Length: 107
Image 1 (cartoon, one colour):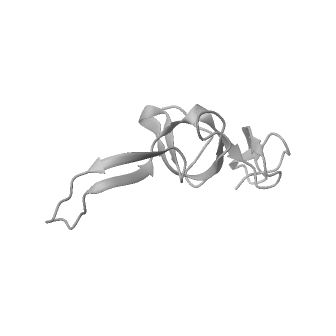
Image 2 (cartoon, helix red, strand yellow):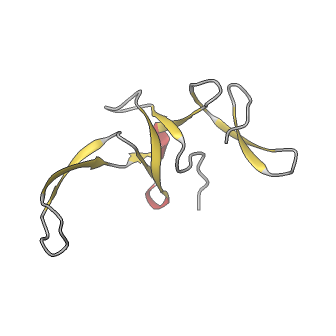
Image 3 (cartoon, rainbow, N blue to C red):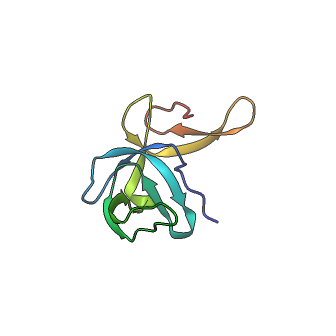
């Protein structure tokens, strides 16, 4: 399986498309399809049928639609800009991500 440089709860910026420049948190990484769900980005309408037995109302629901993983960049907390992510070993020998712009470790 392919390794991605983004994880759930990362703050990312959309780099292309109708939502270019928007910033949001990753809700889910869909590894099978190389896509991510970003909070309040790429909103789409879903027409749903109600189910009285389950207590669900029908109607038009707005929800996040998946974006391709190549269309987002991780935001660095230290330099507050979209950056590329690298990997290195810390003092304890653990693999950590770091910002390639400011060279600081990411969470």
